[in-house]
Length: 461
Image (cartoon, rainbow, N blue to C red):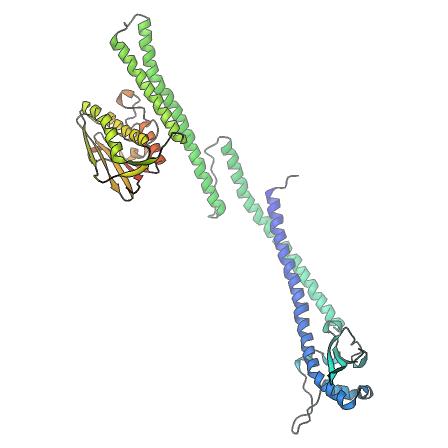
Protein backbone atom coordinates (compact mmCIF):
# COMPACT_ATOMS: atom_id res chain seq x y z
CA UNK A 1 0.00 0.00 0.00
CA UNK A 2 1.39 3.35 -1.06
CA UNK A 3 1.38 5.96 1.72
CA UNK A 4 0.76 9.51 0.54
CA UNK A 5 2.95 12.44 1.48
CA UNK A 6 0.13 14.02 3.48
CA UNK A 7 -0.12 10.92 5.66
CA UNK A 8 3.64 10.83 6.09
CA UNK A 9 3.77 14.50 6.98
CA UNK A 10 0.84 14.14 9.40
CA UNK A 11 2.38 11.24 11.29
CA UNK A 12 5.82 12.80 11.27
CA UNK A 13 4.67 16.03 12.92
CA UNK A 14 2.30 14.16 15.23
CA UNK A 15 5.01 11.78 16.42
CA UNK A 16 7.36 14.71 16.95
CA UNK A 17 4.77 16.56 19.07
CA UNK A 18 3.91 13.41 21.01
CA UNK A 19 7.59 12.76 21.70
CA UNK A 20 8.00 16.29 23.02
CA UNK A 21 4.99 15.92 25.33
CA UNK A 22 6.16 12.54 26.65
CA UNK A 23 9.67 13.82 27.26
CA UNK A 24 8.32 16.88 29.09
CA UNK A 25 5.99 14.79 31.27
CA UNK A 26 8.73 12.30 32.10
CA UNK A 27 11.15 15.10 32.86
CA UNK A 28 8.67 16.83 35.18
CA UNK A 29 7.99 13.59 37.05
CA UNK A 30 11.68 12.86 37.35
CA UNK A 31 12.47 16.37 38.50
CA UNK A 32 9.74 16.20 41.12
CA UNK A 33 10.85 12.82 42.40
CA UNK A 34 14.56 13.60 42.33
CA UNK A 35 14.34 17.29 42.99
CA UNK A 36 11.58 18.09 45.47
CA UNK A 37 11.64 14.80 47.40
CA UNK A 38 15.42 14.82 47.25
CA UNK A 39 15.38 18.31 48.70
CA UNK A 40 13.23 17.16 51.62
CA UNK A 41 15.50 14.20 52.27
CA UNK A 42 18.55 16.46 52.12
CA UNK A 43 17.00 18.73 54.75
CA UNK A 44 16.50 15.73 57.01
CA UNK A 45 20.03 14.49 56.34
CA UNK A 46 21.40 17.87 57.45
CA UNK A 47 19.55 17.52 60.75
CA UNK A 48 20.93 13.97 61.15
CA UNK A 49 24.46 15.27 60.62
CA UNK A 50 23.81 17.93 63.27
CA UNK A 51 22.64 15.24 65.75
CA UNK A 52 25.56 12.84 65.33
CA UNK A 53 28.03 14.75 67.59
CA UNK A 54 25.42 15.07 70.38
CA UNK A 55 24.50 11.41 70.18
CA UNK A 56 28.17 10.39 70.24
CA UNK A 57 28.81 12.61 73.29
CA UNK A 58 25.79 11.12 75.09
CA UNK A 59 27.01 7.57 74.40
CA UNK A 60 30.48 8.43 75.69
CA UNK A 61 28.94 9.83 78.85
CA UNK A 62 26.72 6.79 79.58
CA UNK A 63 28.77 3.98 78.03
CA UNK A 64 25.85 2.36 76.22
CA UNK A 65 22.38 3.06 74.77
CA UNK A 66 20.46 1.91 77.81
CA UNK A 67 19.75 5.47 78.96
CA UNK A 68 17.74 6.07 75.78
CA UNK A 69 15.71 2.86 76.15
CA UNK A 70 14.80 3.79 79.74
CA UNK A 71 13.77 7.41 79.14
CA UNK A 72 12.40 8.59 75.76
CA UNK A 73 12.84 12.22 76.87
CA UNK A 74 16.61 11.77 76.65
CA UNK A 75 16.14 10.88 72.98
CA UNK A 76 13.99 13.91 72.38
CA UNK A 77 16.62 16.16 73.92
CA UNK A 78 19.16 14.69 71.51
CA UNK A 79 16.83 15.07 68.55
CA UNK A 80 15.69 18.59 69.46
CA UNK A 81 17.90 20.11 72.17
CA UNK A 82 16.53 22.98 74.24
CA UNK A 83 18.74 26.01 74.79
CA UNK A 84 19.57 26.47 78.52
CA UNK A 85 21.50 29.75 78.39
CA UNK A 86 20.28 32.49 80.75
CA UNK A 87 17.76 34.84 79.22
CA UNK A 88 16.98 32.50 76.34
CA UNK A 89 13.48 31.17 75.78
CA UNK A 90 13.71 27.43 76.47
CA UNK A 91 11.03 26.67 73.82
CA UNK A 92 12.73 25.01 70.84
CA UNK A 93 12.49 26.53 67.38
CA UNK A 94 11.89 24.14 64.48
CA UNK A 95 14.34 24.36 61.64
CA UNK A 96 13.22 23.93 58.01
CA UNK A 97 14.12 20.26 58.18
CA UNK A 98 12.01 19.85 61.31
CA UNK A 99 9.06 21.45 59.51
CA UNK A 100 9.26 18.76 56.83
CA UNK A 101 8.71 16.01 59.43
CA UNK A 102 12.32 14.91 59.67
CA UNK A 103 12.19 14.58 63.49
CA UNK A 104 9.42 12.02 63.35
CA UNK A 105 11.36 10.02 60.74
CA UNK A 106 14.62 9.79 62.75
CA UNK A 107 15.66 6.78 64.84
CA UNK A 108 18.75 5.21 66.37
CA UNK A 109 20.35 1.88 65.44
CA UNK A 110 23.05 0.12 67.44
CA UNK A 111 26.30 -1.12 65.95
CA UNK A 112 24.53 -4.28 64.70
CA UNK A 113 21.86 -2.14 62.92
CA UNK A 114 19.17 -3.07 65.48
CA UNK A 115 16.67 -0.37 66.38
CA UNK A 116 17.29 1.30 69.75
CA UNK A 117 14.83 4.21 69.79
CA UNK A 118 12.93 6.55 67.50
CA UNK A 119 10.83 5.84 64.43
CA UNK A 120 9.86 2.16 64.35
CA UNK A 121 10.47 1.97 60.58
CA UNK A 122 14.18 2.80 60.66
CA UNK A 123 16.43 -0.04 59.57
CA UNK A 124 19.47 -0.93 57.49
CA UNK A 125 17.84 0.50 54.32
CA UNK A 126 17.18 3.91 55.87
CA UNK A 127 19.28 7.01 55.36
CA UNK A 128 21.91 6.66 58.12
CA UNK A 129 25.13 8.18 59.43
CA UNK A 130 27.58 6.38 61.77
CA UNK A 131 28.11 7.37 65.41
CA UNK A 132 31.77 6.91 66.33
CA UNK A 133 33.30 6.96 69.80
CA UNK A 134 37.05 6.56 70.18
CA UNK A 135 37.31 5.46 66.56
CA UNK A 136 34.70 2.72 66.99
CA UNK A 137 31.23 2.74 65.40
CA UNK A 138 28.79 2.31 68.26
CA UNK A 139 25.58 3.05 66.40
CA UNK A 140 23.81 4.75 63.55
CA UNK A 141 21.52 7.76 63.42
CA UNK A 142 18.97 6.74 60.76
CA UNK A 143 16.12 8.49 58.95
CA UNK A 144 13.24 6.98 56.97
CA UNK A 145 13.09 8.53 53.44
CA UNK A 146 10.29 11.01 52.95
CA UNK A 147 8.63 9.06 50.16
CA UNK A 148 8.35 5.97 52.42
CA UNK A 149 6.29 7.79 55.05
CA UNK A 150 4.26 9.99 52.70
CA UNK A 151 0.71 10.28 54.08
CA UNK A 152 -2.02 8.65 52.01
CA UNK A 153 -3.75 11.95 51.31
CA UNK A 154 -0.49 13.42 50.06
CA UNK A 155 0.17 10.34 47.95
CA UNK A 156 -3.29 10.56 46.43
CA UNK A 157 -2.71 14.26 45.74
CA UNK A 158 0.53 13.48 43.90
CA UNK A 159 -1.17 10.70 41.98
CA UNK A 160 -3.93 13.08 40.91
CA UNK A 161 -1.32 15.57 39.78
CA UNK A 162 0.41 12.92 37.69
CA UNK A 163 -2.93 11.86 36.17
CA UNK A 164 -3.75 15.49 35.37
CA UNK A 165 -0.33 15.84 33.78
CA UNK A 166 -1.05 12.74 31.68
CA UNK A 167 -4.41 14.15 30.57
CA UNK A 168 -2.78 17.45 29.70
CA UNK A 169 -0.23 15.56 27.60
CA UNK A 170 -2.95 13.62 25.80
CA UNK A 171 -4.87 16.85 25.19
CA UNK A 172 -1.73 18.48 23.84
CA UNK A 173 -1.24 15.56 21.45
CA UNK A 174 -4.85 15.88 20.28
CA UNK A 175 -4.42 19.61 19.64
CA UNK A 176 -1.16 18.90 17.84
CA UNK A 177 -2.93 16.28 15.70
CA UNK A 178 -5.66 18.76 14.76
CA UNK A 179 -3.20 21.52 13.91
CA UNK A 180 -1.01 19.06 12.00
CA UNK A 181 -4.00 17.92 9.95
CA UNK A 182 -4.95 21.49 9.07
CA UNK A 183 -1.35 22.45 8.28
CA UNK A 184 -0.66 19.38 6.17
CA UNK A 185 -3.91 19.85 4.28
CA UNK A 186 -3.08 23.46 3.41
CA UNK A 187 0.51 22.59 2.56
CA UNK A 188 -0.37 19.59 0.45
CA UNK A 189 -2.98 21.59 -1.45
CA UNK A 190 -0.18 23.74 -2.85
CA UNK A 191 2.00 20.71 -3.50
CA UNK A 192 -0.85 19.05 -5.42
CA UNK A 193 -1.23 22.21 -7.49
CA UNK A 194 2.46 22.08 -8.35
CA UNK A 195 2.23 18.36 -9.17
CA UNK A 196 -0.74 18.99 -11.47
CA UNK A 197 1.03 21.84 -13.24
CA UNK A 198 4.13 19.67 -13.64
CA UNK A 199 2.07 16.90 -15.22
CA UNK A 200 0.45 19.36 -17.62
CA UNK A 201 3.85 20.77 -18.50
CA UNK A 202 5.22 17.27 -19.12
CA UNK A 203 2.23 16.62 -21.40
CA UNK A 204 3.17 19.63 -23.55
CA UNK A 205 1.03 22.37 -22.02
CA UNK A 206 3.77 25.00 -21.78
CA UNK A 207 1.26 27.68 -20.83
CA UNK A 208 0.76 25.97 -17.46
CA UNK A 209 1.51 28.24 -14.51
CA UNK A 210 1.38 27.97 -10.71
CA UNK A 211 -0.10 30.58 -8.39
CA UNK A 212 2.80 31.89 -6.33
CA UNK A 213 0.87 32.59 -3.14
CA UNK A 214 3.06 33.29 -0.11
CA UNK A 215 6.69 34.34 -0.21
CA UNK A 216 8.08 31.15 1.34
CA UNK A 217 10.09 28.22 -0.06
CA UNK A 218 7.04 26.91 -1.94
CA UNK A 219 6.45 30.39 -3.32
CA UNK A 220 10.03 30.55 -4.58
CA UNK A 221 9.60 27.08 -6.06
CA UNK A 222 6.45 28.24 -7.84
CA UNK A 223 8.31 31.24 -9.25
CA UNK A 224 11.11 28.98 -10.49
CA UNK A 225 8.55 26.65 -12.05
CA UNK A 226 6.83 29.54 -13.81
CA UNK A 227 10.16 30.79 -15.16
CA UNK A 228 10.99 27.29 -16.38
CA UNK A 229 7.56 26.95 -18.03
CA UNK A 230 7.99 30.36 -19.66
CA UNK A 231 11.41 29.35 -20.95
CA UNK A 232 10.04 26.09 -22.32
CA UNK A 233 7.15 27.93 -23.92
CA UNK A 234 9.54 30.39 -25.53
CA UNK A 235 11.80 27.53 -26.64
CA UNK A 236 8.90 25.64 -28.18
CA UNK A 237 7.71 28.76 -29.96
CA UNK A 238 11.25 29.43 -31.18
CA UNK A 239 11.55 25.82 -32.35
CA UNK A 240 8.39 26.07 -34.41
CA UNK A 241 9.47 29.40 -35.83
CA UNK A 242 12.91 27.96 -36.51
CA UNK A 243 11.46 25.01 -38.41
CA UNK A 244 9.20 27.30 -40.42
CA UNK A 245 12.13 29.62 -41.20
CA UNK A 246 14.38 26.73 -42.26
CA UNK A 247 11.74 25.35 -44.61
CA UNK A 248 11.22 28.83 -46.08
CA UNK A 249 14.92 29.55 -46.45
CA UNK A 250 15.55 26.19 -48.09
CA UNK A 251 12.48 26.39 -50.33
CA UNK A 252 13.48 29.72 -51.92
CA UNK A 253 16.80 28.67 -53.55
CA UNK A 254 15.42 25.23 -54.37
CA UNK A 255 12.43 26.81 -56.11
CA UNK A 256 14.75 29.03 -58.15
CA UNK A 257 16.94 26.06 -59.09
CA UNK A 258 13.92 23.96 -60.05
CA UNK A 259 12.47 26.73 -62.20
CA UNK A 260 15.80 27.23 -63.98
CA UNK A 261 16.28 23.52 -64.59
CA UNK A 262 12.69 22.96 -65.76
CA UNK A 263 13.00 25.92 -68.13
CA UNK A 264 16.15 24.43 -69.59
CA UNK A 265 14.59 20.96 -69.84
CA UNK A 266 11.50 22.33 -71.59
CA UNK A 267 13.65 24.29 -74.04
CA UNK A 268 12.17 27.59 -72.86
CA UNK A 269 15.57 28.83 -71.75
CA UNK A 270 18.85 27.81 -73.36
CA UNK A 271 21.80 26.65 -71.28
CA UNK A 272 23.94 29.74 -71.18
CA UNK A 273 26.69 31.00 -68.93
CA UNK A 274 24.21 33.45 -67.44
CA UNK A 275 21.71 30.72 -66.48
CA UNK A 276 24.48 28.53 -65.07
CA UNK A 277 25.81 31.47 -63.04
CA UNK A 278 22.31 32.11 -61.66
CA UNK A 279 21.95 28.49 -60.59
CA UNK A 280 25.47 28.49 -59.15
CA UNK A 281 24.61 31.58 -57.09
CA UNK A 282 21.53 29.86 -55.67
CA UNK A 283 23.57 26.76 -54.86
CA UNK A 284 26.09 29.02 -53.10
CA UNK A 285 23.35 30.64 -51.03
CA UNK A 286 21.95 27.21 -50.21
CA UNK A 287 25.40 25.97 -49.19
CA UNK A 288 25.96 29.07 -47.04
CA UNK A 289 22.64 28.48 -45.29
CA UNK A 290 23.51 24.83 -44.63
CA UNK A 291 26.93 25.82 -43.29
CA UNK A 292 25.39 28.47 -41.04
CA UNK A 293 22.85 25.96 -39.72
CA UNK A 294 25.63 23.50 -39.03
CA UNK A 295 27.74 26.08 -37.18
CA UNK A 296 24.73 27.26 -35.20
CA UNK A 297 23.81 23.74 -34.12
CA UNK A 298 27.39 23.07 -33.04
CA UNK A 299 27.62 26.27 -31.01
CA UNK A 300 24.20 25.65 -29.46
CA UNK A 301 25.23 22.29 -28.03
CA UNK A 302 28.81 23.35 -27.33
CA UNK A 303 30.21 20.77 -29.74
CA UNK A 304 32.17 23.25 -31.83
CA UNK A 305 35.82 22.62 -31.16
CA UNK A 306 37.51 25.44 -29.22
CA UNK A 307 41.24 25.34 -28.79
CA UNK A 308 41.91 28.02 -26.23
CA UNK A 309 45.42 29.45 -26.39
CA UNK A 310 46.87 32.87 -25.49
CA UNK A 311 46.46 35.07 -28.57
CA UNK A 312 46.68 38.75 -29.46
CA UNK A 313 43.36 40.18 -30.63
CA UNK A 314 45.20 42.54 -32.99
CA UNK A 315 46.45 39.54 -34.98
CA UNK A 316 42.94 38.15 -35.26
CA UNK A 317 41.57 41.49 -36.44
CA UNK A 318 44.25 41.96 -39.09
CA UNK A 319 43.55 38.48 -40.50
CA UNK A 320 39.78 38.99 -40.58
CA UNK A 321 40.04 42.48 -42.09
CA UNK A 322 42.42 41.22 -44.77
CA UNK A 323 39.79 38.82 -46.05
CA UNK A 324 36.96 41.39 -46.05
CA UNK A 325 38.57 44.68 -47.03
CA UNK A 326 38.39 44.07 -50.79
CA UNK A 327 34.69 43.18 -50.66
CA UNK A 328 33.88 46.22 -48.53
CA UNK A 329 35.69 48.54 -50.93
CA UNK A 330 33.92 46.90 -53.89
CA UNK A 331 30.58 47.84 -52.28
CA UNK A 332 31.74 51.45 -51.80
CA UNK A 333 32.18 51.16 -48.01
CA UNK A 334 35.00 52.85 -46.13
CA UNK A 335 36.66 50.58 -43.58
CA UNK A 336 38.30 52.23 -40.59
CA UNK A 337 40.40 50.13 -38.20
CA UNK A 338 41.68 51.39 -34.83
CA UNK A 339 43.60 48.91 -32.67
CA UNK A 340 45.37 49.86 -29.43
CA UNK A 341 49.17 49.63 -29.69
CA UNK A 342 49.44 47.68 -26.41
CA UNK A 343 49.09 43.86 -26.59
CA UNK A 344 45.47 42.78 -26.33
CA UNK A 345 46.01 39.30 -24.94
CA UNK A 346 43.14 36.90 -24.35
CA UNK A 347 42.66 33.15 -24.06
CA UNK A 348 40.67 32.06 -27.10
CA UNK A 349 40.33 30.09 -30.30
CA UNK A 350 41.90 32.15 -33.09
CA UNK A 351 39.90 30.47 -35.85
CA UNK A 352 36.56 30.98 -34.14
CA UNK A 353 37.36 34.59 -33.28
CA UNK A 354 38.22 35.23 -36.93
CA UNK A 355 34.84 33.74 -37.81
CA UNK A 356 33.24 36.07 -35.26
CA UNK A 357 34.80 39.22 -36.76
CA UNK A 358 34.14 38.05 -40.31
CA UNK A 359 30.45 37.49 -39.53
CA UNK A 360 30.15 40.97 -38.04
CA UNK A 361 31.85 42.59 -41.05
CA UNK A 362 29.67 40.47 -43.35
CA UNK A 363 26.60 41.78 -41.53
CA UNK A 364 27.77 45.38 -42.05
CA UNK A 365 28.52 44.64 -45.70
CA UNK A 366 25.02 43.35 -46.35
CA UNK A 367 23.07 45.98 -44.47
CA UNK A 368 25.04 49.23 -44.89
CA UNK A 369 24.10 51.59 -47.67
CA UNK A 370 26.67 52.19 -50.41
CA UNK A 371 29.07 55.02 -49.61
CA UNK A 372 28.82 54.36 -45.90
CA UNK A 373 31.39 53.70 -43.18
CA UNK A 374 32.35 50.52 -41.30
CA UNK A 375 34.58 51.01 -38.26
CA UNK A 376 36.42 48.36 -36.24
CA UNK A 377 37.97 49.26 -32.88
CA UNK A 378 39.79 47.19 -30.26
CA UNK A 379 41.35 48.32 -27.01
CA UNK A 380 41.72 47.50 -23.34
CA UNK A 381 38.59 47.75 -21.22
CA UNK A 382 38.70 47.19 -17.47
CA UNK A 383 40.30 43.74 -17.04
CA UNK A 384 39.61 42.53 -20.58
CA UNK A 385 39.44 43.50 -24.23
CA UNK A 386 36.62 45.38 -25.94
CA UNK A 387 35.94 44.99 -29.66
CA UNK A 388 33.51 47.37 -31.36
CA UNK A 389 32.15 46.97 -34.88
CA UNK A 390 29.87 49.77 -36.05
CA UNK A 391 28.53 51.04 -39.36
CA UNK A 392 26.48 53.81 -40.88
CA UNK A 393 22.85 53.94 -41.97
CA UNK A 394 20.43 52.31 -42.14
CA UNK A 395 19.98 51.97 -38.38
CA UNK A 396 18.02 49.56 -36.19
CA UNK A 397 15.06 50.69 -34.04
CA UNK A 398 15.74 50.60 -30.32
CA UNK A 399 12.98 48.05 -29.68
CA UNK A 400 14.57 45.66 -32.20
CA UNK A 401 18.13 45.66 -30.83
CA UNK A 402 17.57 42.81 -28.36
CA UNK A 403 16.13 40.56 -31.08
CA UNK A 404 19.10 40.85 -33.44
CA UNK A 405 20.81 37.79 -31.94
CA UNK A 406 17.77 35.58 -32.48
CA UNK A 407 18.15 33.12 -35.32
CA UNK A 408 16.55 34.08 -38.66
CA UNK A 409 15.65 37.54 -37.35
CA UNK A 410 16.01 40.40 -39.84
CA UNK A 411 14.89 43.92 -39.13
CA UNK A 412 13.34 44.66 -42.50
CA UNK A 413 11.00 41.67 -42.18
CA UNK A 414 11.45 40.81 -45.85
CA UNK A 415 12.20 37.19 -46.67
CA UNK A 416 14.03 38.11 -49.84
CA UNK A 417 17.53 36.70 -49.39
CA UNK A 418 18.91 39.18 -51.92
CA UNK A 419 18.59 41.91 -49.29
CA UNK A 420 20.54 40.07 -46.63
CA UNK A 421 21.93 36.83 -45.27
CA UNK A 422 20.28 33.89 -43.62
CA UNK A 423 19.67 35.69 -40.32
CA UNK A 424 21.97 33.26 -38.47
CA UNK A 425 25.23 35.22 -38.44
CA UNK A 426 24.61 37.22 -35.27
CA UNK A 427 23.19 34.16 -33.47
CA UNK A 428 26.44 32.32 -34.25
CA UNK A 429 28.43 35.37 -33.05
CA UNK A 430 26.59 35.33 -29.72
CA UNK A 431 27.37 31.63 -29.19
CA UNK A 432 31.06 32.15 -30.00
CA UNK A 433 31.34 35.08 -27.58
CA UNK A 434 29.57 33.19 -24.78
CA UNK A 435 31.85 30.19 -25.38
CA UNK A 436 34.75 32.56 -24.64
CA UNK A 437 32.99 33.69 -21.42
CA UNK A 438 32.39 37.10 -22.92
CA UNK A 439 29.42 39.38 -23.54
CA UNK A 440 27.98 40.80 -26.76
CA UNK A 441 25.38 43.55 -27.09
CA UNK A 442 23.82 45.66 -29.82
CA UNK A 443 23.60 49.45 -29.61
CA UNK A 444 22.87 52.41 -31.85
CA UNK A 445 25.94 53.56 -33.74
CA UNK A 446 26.88 57.28 -33.76
CA UNK A 447 27.31 56.86 -37.56
CA UNK A 448 23.58 56.12 -37.83
CA UNK A 449 23.75 52.35 -38.16
CA UNK A 450 24.36 49.41 -35.84
CA UNK A 451 27.03 49.16 -33.13
CA UNK A 452 28.08 45.71 -31.85
CA UNK A 453 30.11 45.73 -28.61
CA UNK A 454 32.02 42.63 -27.51
CA UNK A 455 33.76 42.30 -24.14
CA UNK A 456 36.17 39.38 -23.70
CA UNK A 457 38.09 38.51 -20.51
CA UNK A 458 41.78 39.27 -20.89
CA UNK A 459 44.97 37.73 -19.58
CA UNK A 460 48.25 39.29 -18.54
CA UNK A 461 50.50 40.01 -21.49
